[in-house]
Length: 453
Image (cartoon, rainbow, N blue to C red; front, side, top):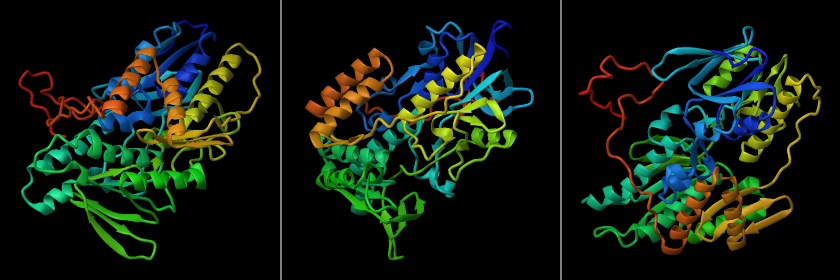
């Protein structure tokens, strides 16, 4: 497939996250035709996935259809496909359509904004028992496990089984782990406290494990200490200098700093530690000779291009440059830079400015009225940090309807302890687990049964 109009340069963008969308925005008036490819049909605001998984926000409030977002960009189109690699000699992007059919997209310039995936640090077998949180599918799985655990505890007759179902273990004390740990305790102590007859939800234990010395270490020692104190007040049990050595259906094994191992029985184990480049990053690196860092992200030059391939720019979380963090601001700024550079080149104008990142800070929500925010030399914690967090996330949400919907949901959650978005399914929905897998022969039959998860 190719772009419309032979006089226009073809720009293909892999990924509809912040980097991809900001690149589209920067290319709005450039003499190019843009094709945005993503394996999901929506843009997702990942920093609020934990609120989707704990019943505050629906998936619709943290996502927006990519076709709707591109509606005002007449020179841009969206294609639902999963990119599997590229052919740099032919300047073609290789992909799969839903149903598993191969498809290609030609390009003059390529922007790689594919994001990252969960990393289990070489223990992919943990994924079966400890889901990560990178997609809406992940958040809905976690929602089912979190709220389902209370249901299992309610019907359990064995005290040991009941205790196990009321134990939640989280691996990783970065922003996602801290936020999710705080929310599970808030669910147990506020939202669910009067809904059960045979259990006391407030008895739920939340265990937070991390190999480092303190939670939220990148925020600095002051905010890290405040976050730790807040978690203590919420009742989150922190286990630092702890390395997870095994996970199964009933709990996990952990090695402490002194080398001793301990077993923790837990009905729900969630993985909130580590990211890695997706398979397409390795495919692009192999095709272009690009280097990858330890996490599998593609190393780029100061102009975000792959050495030897100035027509290929890598942005966002999948990019490795000067140890920049995988946060939304990096994705936005690299996307804008890549789009502006290509816009200049498409007009046959020179563009030799290197990319420079402006650090606008970090924020983590722990519980109602408690957050930590770092903005340059300014640091906020507790209620002031929570207010700053609110304004930051309202501004980052895509679309006024999502902003208004989030504000209304937050109002009920923060003032009345109501979490309306707690629905979870007990059966797998659909015919195939992955739409990019080949369809079964009986897919079109009216009596086709859903495949198990």
